[in-house]
Length: 324
Image 1 (spheres, rainbow, N blue to C red):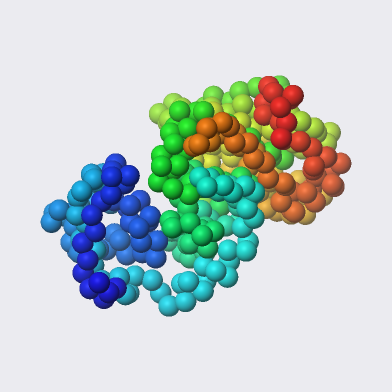
Image 2: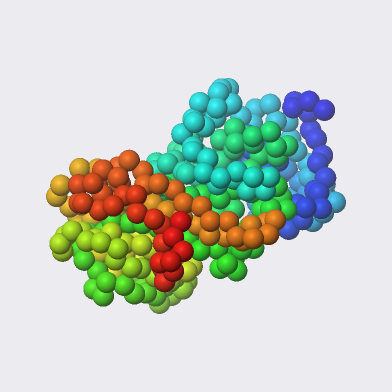
């Protein structure tokens, strides 16, 4: 059946429980979120003949009405995808898992005004697989580093469960303005979204969701800057940025949360100095997968300027003997 015709697609057994919008993203990556919302508002997408919302959970065997797809993607969408795929470095690949080094400045998913994003590149990361890889966690647009993708629905389910159950450990490196006191510790501060001059941001509030971050000062440049190792024990939006700023040592380059204090003399790169350095996660086929990503160039330049070791091993907090 052609792209210009209405189709009906049956929900597979391994897709049961998916939100409708995520099911669409998997099945029809060329359909942007705004178009799907329009189709839902106008009743062009239906499940078992009834109107639904984007967050509706699907069941195996349900039948989803798909409107004509010809206008779903703008001309040259594929060309744009293949052109930007080389920006992504593959750190690990096997039959179940793909781990990439996401560059700073690349959004993971699209949104208003965001046409260039990783989700649009996933077809270029198939490496011969029948399915496009699936996102199982996120990084902020301006954060670089390790990002894990699943190469099958079964692997996605196992990896997502590991993130939910806190079996996955994520290590970040950051440069912060100021010198943390104490040099290591835990930030336990609930976070909630609040409006602000520069758009919505996360802020500490008793009414927020619990957010916990462990930190360790690896090295420092006097009292003006410090290299931190950070491990988030929860996964809130902008958690590390909001926590560091609230604790009095904002991440360098993070004007959104740190204001002027987030910029220090001598550091010419005004970009966010936050990098997902390493991850340790149960592998879907058994065992444990641990992968690390080198610092991006703007952070390497800052590390050289401050006399830090940009090639130091990635050590999870409290486990200095198990460095990647």
